[in-house]
Amino acid sequence: MNWNYYYILIFSFLMSGFSMGQDYEIIDATIELYPTNFSSAEELSKFISRDFTSEEEKVRAIYTWIIRNVTYDPEEYKQFNYNFKNYRERNSKEEITRKKVIQRTLEKGIAVCEGYAMLFERLCELQGVSNYLVRGDIKSNFNDIGRPFKKVHMWNVAMIDGQAFLFDPTWGAGKYNGKFIREPSYYYYKTPPEQFIKTHYPHLQEDTFLTEIFSREDFASLPLLINEKLLLSDIESPSHGVISSMDEDGMIYFSIRNIVPSAISYSFGNEKKSDHLFRNRRRNSIFNSRAIGKRKPADLF
Image 1 (cartoon, rainbow, N blue to C red):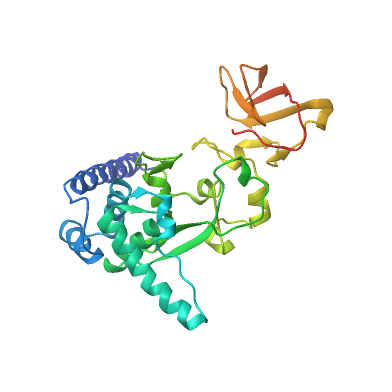
Image 2 (tube, rainbow, N blue to C red; image 1 turned 45 degrees about the vertical axis):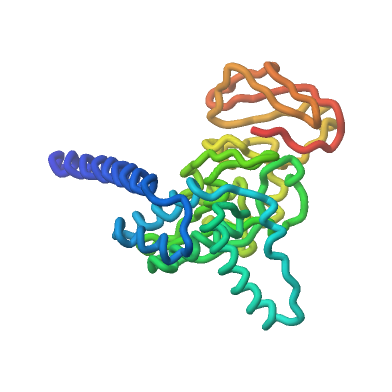
């Protein structure tokens, strides 16, 4: 084996990753200098065209500007309600509404998921980046476990150098709990499909970008995973998000791979538990606790 070639190859891979990290830092720092509001998507797009050249750079710039400058406000749902008599009128009004949503998002700096996703879509269009909107369901709280599929959210797919990636600038901007808490994050930038599926399910199954079929029913029945590093494959049991305390003589067993905590806490119904008995089995952590109640949503892992 040619070891010199091997070392050069490994070094080149390391340098490539390091270079991309440096590029991201430069892009993010450049966006910090941009205005926080624009009169049109075309105006913001001119800034991006001036400063960036590759598809990767442009998409990163678009995502960064949106998550840093747009505030989630549920009152925006009331701004663009409309009725229509037929599909032709609906399509016409939808395009008009899309333009108004994008304009308001840029000028006011407020939006719901449609504003985030439509602005991302439009800026990609202006930069010549192939992309499309995705409507689908999400899982963000206990009440989402086990319920029927609903198209309640919107996110994006964009092609970078011929490869499709998943983006959710709404969730990347922060979280809403009575008020918007801005917490810019790149977890929802080019999110791997096996992580994205924990919380997002598209209207069309192929937009999961998973190699195996994963149905709406599968998505609905899963536990809610809030740890970003924890994958569905790490949960050995229970496999369903709705569990019964009547199982196993009142004991509920949790088996999670690759987790070795010093203490655990969880909630069952409205009651929070903590520091309960657990034991480790090789690479698995198995948590046992007696539960009260019947047919409650699964705990947050």
